[in-house]
Length: 489
Image (tube, rainbow, N blue to C red; front, side):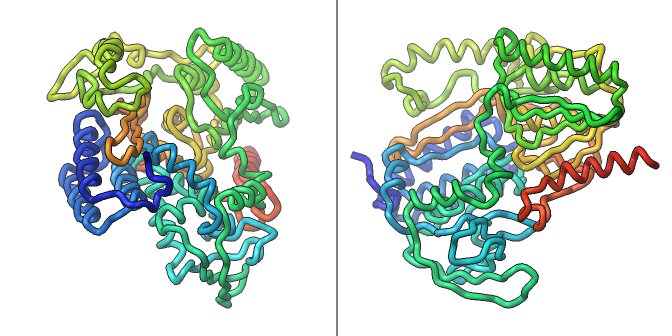
């Protein structure tokens, strides 16, 4: 039987055994382990983990250690989950959760709920005598991003603050909160009673900003994924909310390619000078949707990546692999996957296995004959990830592109992606996932782009407090004003 609460005991002996297995899996299978960290840094954090286990006693404690290790690597495709029985136990918890949704607005954490004990928009200063900035830093480990990016972490924290707080600090009956009203330096204090898991998510569903920011968490229908509209005679807006449209043979992909061809033919015929490309809610998807789109927005030959490799010839630690196939049968079924890996990554160099020119990822793409050659205004946000951030990085690398918005959670120069692999730690049953392909994106080096960060805008524009209250799109209004200004100069 599994534990029925994340606060139940887990012996240090079991933690140490799982930690050793976790580390060995990362060393053998995770090509991103040293992408942003040195060997010394990785060794140091594992030494920290061993010492932390000596002070730990529960599933929650161990999960927090594994989450810290996972986040430290710097890959948005890294995930850590409690076993399902423990995850289900959250729904039965009747108290212990912070009762009010929060949102990051104008560089402050504010109350994002109209019917609570603290007024809407009030700035949180501290919770239980801990500064809110320190609280949030302790929760960053639960929402992974590429490199050392922080903007993307706020997307997850905004929606799941109460759950993350409960996992990090345990169940708490009361919260002493200090806060300030807008345009006031007076510190107010209130004691809030905790609420249940179910009730906090009811409040999250009724959060004040939901009409504006639900797009950050939306499962897109095909009819909502892409759109184009002209604004007057000189400007158009191309909205790309997702690249999850299947591969080359998928009818969704074929419909999308037809849409792109029609749109860019019209743009060329209409002599559009300014194209707003809005990818702010694009969390990724499937090849080649990102690449075919970029072919309409570039004047250069390009490829998906300049280099890609994995760190194994055969999937290691099979008996711990996340699979419904019985352990003793896994070697029989894994042969197919190993052959696919070996075909895709045939060249071995210093213990790494690289793609070569036989891979489709190395194919050279050419600009489409109707490729746009005016000014591109690329709108980005912390939600942009995976194939969405690869696309954004490539567009941002163009000389004719102006980038507006907030830093993406996906890296500019590269990321770990494409192929996920999962394992279950045998003693705790904690589930771990990561993507095994370490790739460098086909983007130019730029002075404002940092190796371990996301796509950094030319104009950093966030929603203002007033626009938050009025559900207005600060970034879109900014780019429209910028285009107007540039056209009159």
